[in-house]
Amino acid sequence: MKEPKGVGRMWNLYKMGGFTPAIASMLGSTNAQQMAFIRNINKEQRKQSMLDMPITELEIVVFDLETTGFNPMNGDEIISFGAVLMRGGELEESQSFYSLVNPKRKISRAIVELTGITNDMVQDAPELMQVLHDFMDFVGRRLLIAHGAGHDKQFLNAALWRTSKINLNHRVLDMMMVAKWLEPKRESYSLDDLLISCGIPIKERHHALQDSLMTARLWQNYMARILERNITTLGDLYAYLSKH
Image (cartoon, rainbow, N blue to C red; front, side, top):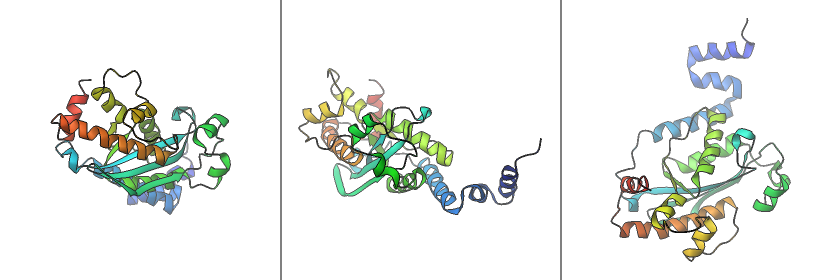
């Protein structure tokens, strides 16, 4: 059986010049450059270990995603990215990231009501590759934090694999796991309940940037309590979390 023309051409380009020229021939130069950038950021992340770094010196990106549903394997898509930078315990509100994403599918009424993101709003939004490129550029090699991080990491991994054939190498710290360790007898670990218990004002829930900002303030609160327990490095924190 003969190979399809596109596959054969891609293979010849790969043999002559490597991965990037081959991908460029299939995706176009802009998408190929974005893919190469994303792959490089992810590759560089593997070279550094944060475990010995003092928590007070970590650069952190607190992020959140809004999506059309709960399962990227069933066709659900990311509709917005939000993120904010922290240096140690300082929240850098001026250094934030927010973008809608065109999911190329209809957003259900339930998700519109939950997030406030309508089909009209995403119609002219940038596509996933562009937003993922910009998000990874903002993240760099920093630690990632999210609340209920399993959901966000699942969608982020699906997006990275679809666009760039890689999985996320960045460490992702789940605020829900930190809360369960600090307060093991709580009945609820929802973001709303944790914010209320810490006296953090709640506004614009299910807006990716606002949720990121509120989660960052929650980390500030928890970081002070972690340091009070003489846990000073990220490695120490992971060791304690692994026991709970």
